[in-house]
Amino acid sequence: MNTLQSHEEEFEAGTVTESGYAALDDAEGYGAASSVGSGSVSIDKVWQAYRQGRSLWLYCKDKLMFQPNTEDELADWCENNFPACYGEYLRRKKH
Image (tube, rainbow, N blue to C red; front, side, top):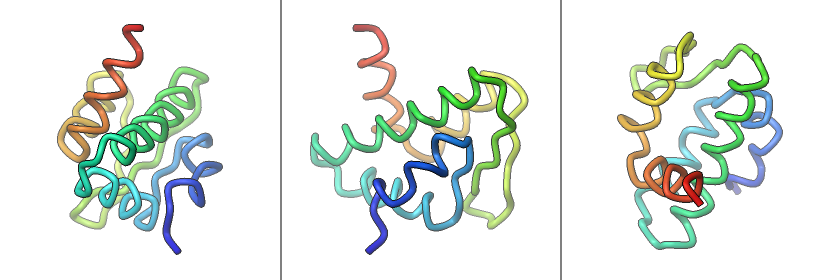
């Protein structure tokens, strides 16, 4: 089964594979508070990897891997692909 939990180590390393992307997309599409909350935790792991200076490799819908070099590029990827999960991540970050 493709779950967010099965991709935790990848997210912590700063990588979102096609399969990890699909798990995030499922959480985003389901839309339940618990699913979006879990997705936001995964988004947080990717941000933590970025802040630790890791090189990020993020899957995109066009089947190419994207390597953001700035916070703005990472924020755009999150917002464009997982707006609900990213929004929840931002809300949690404020508190």
